[in-house]
Length: 177
Image (tube, rainbow, N blue to C red):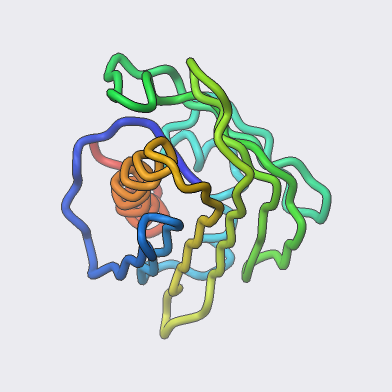
């Protein structure tokens, strides 16, 4: 999920692959020079989430039926279709294999204004890759509408920026800028 926090496009730090089957989902893979355990933990540590995903608050529990909820501050930027960005993304952890994989179901984005968008699913896999990790993110859920199409277009940009920041954080312990 995604962060619908508005960030300017960032240059990728390493090659990433992206898929978006007709704007109906978001999928991306990135190689990170950190262990799968460290990368996995970045999705559940409040300090890490604050650093790389710019969340204001989070409750993330890496156990089945655990809560996965993150909140971003409302942006000054106002999208023509979605309104102000930020808000809350929440769901239920349905699978958790620490250091390897987690899945969140019944995900909803609750924007600062307007109706929630969902349900969605978020799948995250952290696979060993040499001395690092191949991280795969997949967010799915869709209804044919202009709002959903804009959501995934905005989410794809936000995910790319956030994953570049995650890579930097996992490899160095900090995020520039």
